[in-house]
Image (tube, rainbow, N blue to C red; front, side, top):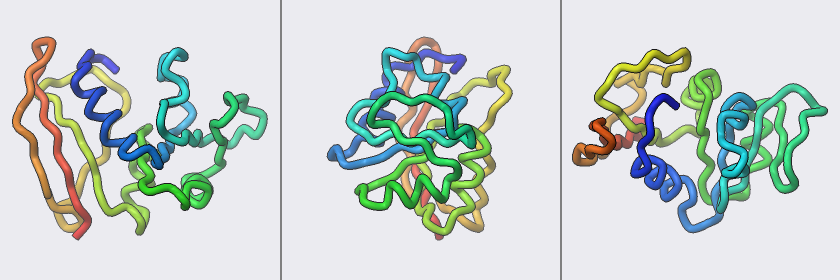
Length: 148
């Protein structure tokens, strides 16, 4: 990520960990973008999407070939969060079980190659918006959307 926002990472950890019976689903590239010292994400069951059956993952991290397979494997968790990348976000937002979107909006443009998909007002409505936070010369806020 082209920004360093420890407060945003703490918020992400708190939301996705919850009471400790949650899961996160991510694409392989997102998995590889997490520094090794922080993989797997603690306090959450980690699922990595890849079609490579031989892809090596640490003990306790599960491979799934599709979002649907990962969701089926994670069905016994309290909450399941999709944490990237762009194609996985898009597929998850179209899934009938997607009820809530947690989004951080940073008030700055970055030169990036992956983006969060557009949230359509016909499908999701803004349910909560935090106060703006300032950290490391960046302003950001947390938004929560619920499916209509």
